[in-house]
Figure 1 (spheres, helix red, strand yellow):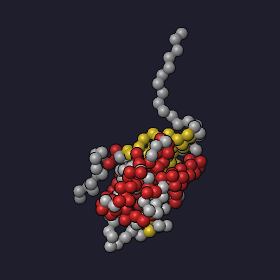
Figure 2 (cartoon, rainbow, N blue to C red; figure 1 turned 180 degrees about the horizontal axis):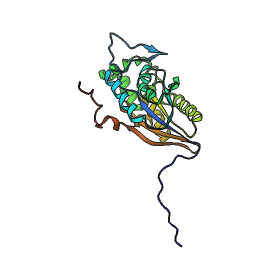
Figure 3 (cartoon, rainbow, N blue to C red; figure 1 turned 90 degrees about the horizontal axis):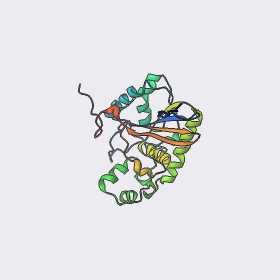
Figure 4 (cartoon, one colour; figure 1 turned 90 degrees about the vertical axis):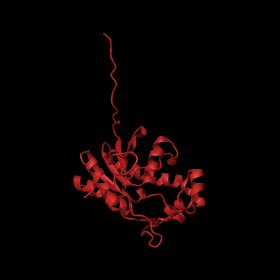
Length: 229
């Protein structure tokens, strides 16, 4: 009798935790005349109307998933982005401060956006070195990875064999996906607003299942505009 060996679909190993990393929606623009409020030194802009709409879209997308827990960072934009999904699931988000965005030192509070627009030399050094630490006073890649991996590990230990959504930031997502892929975080820069990335943390290590999935927003080249009224 001949044996056959079917091709199997991926299944996380026993004892794993699946984490959906969701970037926050679009946040308010930086106005040098009215700097962002700070939370523990980090700029804390709220969502724009478009950002709130994006949060609604990702909430609708994920509401049917068997999510057992929702986590947010210490910054307002992640709380606001998580609200629609938390309402659907009747789950109270838990805050873990270590999911906050990379600390940008001298460019914190929104000044990083202006520095990019101005072509500031420190931005060019950061890009050439591919390390946030090139910005004066900023966290290095290694420092960011250390705290974000610690936060994700805590979530995994608290939710064995479960699916969890973590609403966080582009730099955080890049750091965690890069850690799983043994790559530089700058390879994963530019996650779309409310895009979903999927990690599995298990006894045998970390696995990347997807990155930057914004299919709930339609076109791949731009974020959805607000619907006409």
